[in-house]
Every structure is written in C-alpha cells, then in structure tokens.
Image 1: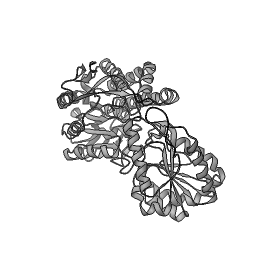
Image 2: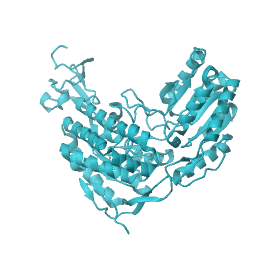
Image 3: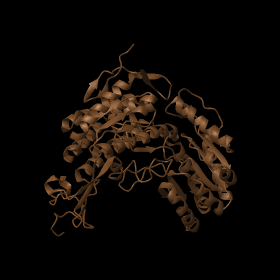
Image 4: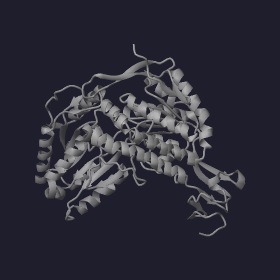
Length: 531
C-alpha cells in the first residue's frame, strides 16, 4: 500500500504517528479516487501538535509585529508564485473552474487577505489602544497567548482554507499559533499551501510550530481537541449540525468558538422592481443560485415574490432557466446526499417542486438545479422547516399575498448572513422597502439593496457573520480586517503599571505612530504633546 503523506507538526514535516486511518481525495466530476493517501490523525498526534503550539505561543505573542507582517506578505508572495500548481490541485479536488473561479477570483482574494492581515499587524489597527491618564488605566487588544484551532470548509479551497484563509490570517495577525485542521475534500491543495506557509514562516524567523496542519480527524478526536482548555479559540466554517457538536465541546471547556453555520440569505423582490425588470432579475437570481453549483454560504436560498402578474412572470422565467440548466457537480457524495435530504425536508414541509425535476445524468456527484415554491401562508405556518438550508443549486420561492404578509415573513426569519431587497428604479417601491429593512436589520449581518448576496468583498466594512444560526456570535466577522482579527484577541488592561513595563503601544512615547484613544481623543502624538 502507498505510503501516507506527512503531517506538519511541531515545526516540521513528519510521518504520521499512530494514525487512526487513511483516505484519498476524489474527483467530484467522476467520483474516482485521486492523488496520494493521507493520514487521519489520532489522539497521540493531536496531543503532540497541541503541546508544540502551547510552547510556541509565548514566543509568537512577544514577536515583533513587523516580523509577523513579513511572514504574511511572504506567504502571499509564495501563493502567487505557485499559482499554477495550486489551481491545478484545487480544480482536481473540487471540480471548481480553474478560470475564472480559482485563478482569477479566489486565489487573488486569498493572497489579498494575507496582505490585509499583514498591514493590520504592521499598523496595529486591530489593537484599539485606550489610555485614561486620570484613572491611570491603559488597555489594548493583544494575543490570546494560546493556540487557535481552525477548521476549514469544503467550498473554498483557498480563501477559507484552514492553513491559508481569513481565519488563519486573522489568528496569525493577532500573534497566536494556528493548528489547522484541513478539509478532507482537498488535502493535496492544503498540503501545498502548508509547504509554502512553512517556508515563509522559517524565513521570517518566527517559531516553527506557529503553523501546524493535520488533514483529517475522527469526530471524537475533533471534539476532544476543541474541548481542551489549552486552546485559546476555535474557528469553524461548515454545517450547522457538525458545528454545534464542536461548539458544545468548546463551551464546556470555556473555549471561545467562532462559527459560520448556515444561512438561506432571503431575497425580497418588490412588485415594482419585478414589473420594471423581471426578466433580468430572473436571470440574475438563476446565475447567483447556480454559481459554483450553489455551494456558497451566501447563496440566495429563499426568495420572497409577490403573488401578482409581475411575480408570476418572474416565477415562470426563473423556472424555465432551472428546467433548462444542465446537471451541476457538487463537492462530494455526502454533499449530494445532504442536499437531497434537505430538498425532501422542504417538500415534506409543504413546498412544491416547480422546476428541475429531472434526474441528472453523468458521472460524479451531479445534481439537477431545482426551484421550489410555497405560499406565504404555508411558510408562516411552518417557518422553521421551510427556511431550512439546502446547500447547492436549490432555492425556494415564497409567494407573498401582499406587503403586510411580506413583512410578517421577514419577521419569521432566524439569523442569516445576508438579506436583500430589490426596488424599482423609479422609487415606487421605496415605502415598502423602508418598512422591510428595519425588520430584516436585526436578523442579518449584511443588509443588501438591489444586488444578489453571493459576492463577499474583502473590506474593513464587511460583516461576514450574523445572528445565530448564521454564526455563533453576532458581533464578529469572518472576513475583513481588522474586525476579523479581534475574534482571536484578548483585551489587556494595565492599572498604574510603570511606563517601562507597559507594552510599547501603550507607553507615553508613540514612535510607531499608532492611533490611540487618549482621554477620549484619537491621536498619534506622544503623551503630553499636542496633535
């Protein structure tokens, strides 16, 4: 039998110790196994990784932020230099389009996130230093002093990869070691990224165990890992069921758990917008719902459409597009099974299939895009079941009787990443939009007008999070620096500590020019100086 690939543990690449099993990636387009064998790490290996991360934590916490930034920048450079290899690996393991998706969109986003994290580390923009001279108090966000465990998802082999994505970059920028648990659907991609990261880490002179990676864990081992008090925080992107099991284990140990769990991202199409440009909106919706085979956490999984002539025309135009669409490839057989189960649950709750009934043909993990429908009354009678997430190229049309019912539907939603309202350009829908937006605001992280939700800009103003169950905490984002970094930071307060014993950014002198709140006023000046 072929040898297992090595794991990145305790500062270097090593043969797996007492693995609990082995696995290979599969080509989603054919269903065939591809690439080498990878280990399922056992408890002994996890123990070694945690101990190495614990040992590295004090040194990384004390490291010069300039060196941390240098690592992140060098890592971004290395990813771009290896673009051909990385794109080929990710395409083989996910069936996502090499271009434009992987090469032109996701890979640049990944290197860009790393550079944004480097800038935040260099400028200390995430630390929020506050000085109260009258009370003798000073505070700033700083490292947790413990390792962060990052669980990567299946749908972004680069931008959310456990060893390269936003969670990884954020935790490292806050000077915490990362123990990355890669997703088993793209292990060779993760291995290639980890090799680049390890080389950049050594070049920056940071502790070698600051970045470690394991390919896969048995469920019990993962639960034991996040339930260790030695862990500073956990970042997770994935299914609600799996995330909640991990969260329960972390909560029991008092470990902060930052998770993105599920979202249907409701879209409200107002009657004036539909009368004005219904055909174009049908195409925009179809393209958004089926982009990447619908495997986006911001996929428009539920669309509220009025029961009107314009709404009927939109529904017919959307159904025609779903009926004509070819089968699409999902990441895995398990993902296909879960999607079928989710669609069945919606149908059992009272939805009806209006498009995409044909069984798909072809090899691999293929599904037919599907459009379902339910009346507003049915939705309100069983809102909990009819807003279940179907992760794939599937959406539910909810046909509202009038504006009042649309507002009631808005109030029935649980927490989501996004909500969208489309209005007429002539202002005819503005009053209805103004009534809907305040109802949606407390239920979502990002409120959108006249755009589908699938794009997530990597911006300091982005909130890629939301109320539960979209995320585990409504006050944090998984995308956008410096906000994403503060998930992995502790608030450090100093009470009458002498200047020489303070961390540099809280001392009287401010040679780095960091913005600090001094006695209620933001300034870059030294204490005692104007400006």
